[in-house]
Length: 352
Image (tube, rainbow, N blue to C red; front, side):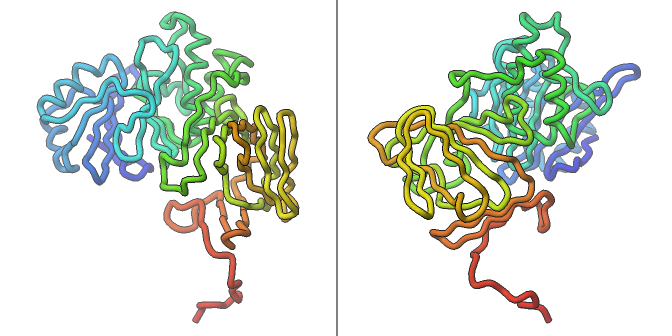
């Protein structure tokens, strides 16, 4: 039967045989219809339970040996079957396909659900031994080290939960477990990536509307190669574009390094016109308040490096906003809150 997980809207169906690892399917309950992922052969009682949970709107299959069951269920329920999406294609609301490079079979993919910090990994990773992860046998891969490096696209998502087709799903601490599995297979090679290998995209535009001048192409670097205490990414800004509003950090010191072009750094004491090879320090507090933009006639590319803090506060002088990031949510599942910085309130304001 399908059991609710601690991830909101996600149900887990497991088949267990003596002496064998668990085989898993997952049901995602969404406002646009439920999605069944990596289904196993179901009996009539399981089909009835699916109907009680709202039925299904589509079936997604990641794992090769689930293709037959997925096709039969999709035909029986007269719903769409997704088995070969393109990289970053929307699979269902809030979920995108992540093409996995250099795996055992062409076309392997995972599903990323950023809002839940969850990734459905299919058969690319095994949930074993208990509380850990392992990779497929080296003999199954044409190049096992290269296949391990190809799974860094999952690391890029910084997952907390990793839902696997075989073995026990990981519902907390998935990034660290996957990192160690990849390091055991590929060694220090996991810590290196070339600028040419990075995936650049206008990521913020995928999640929310934004002013026309805030478009650029960013590539995550730190999560991909195992960084935890430092965050770094590379951003390319077309002419006339801004990376971010003017803001200052309370805890996260940053540094920018210009890789190409002539970007500008606007500060409270003036604007710096930079060039290739420039290092720019951005201390915490008022003196490090900054805005990255491109006032030149050519694209500019910048490495952005900073400390990673679970708890942080940023002040935005132009709009008088205050952003607070929290390690643990204080209301619902929200870990970040943006509020007006003024007027400041008295300690007992609004209290009876």
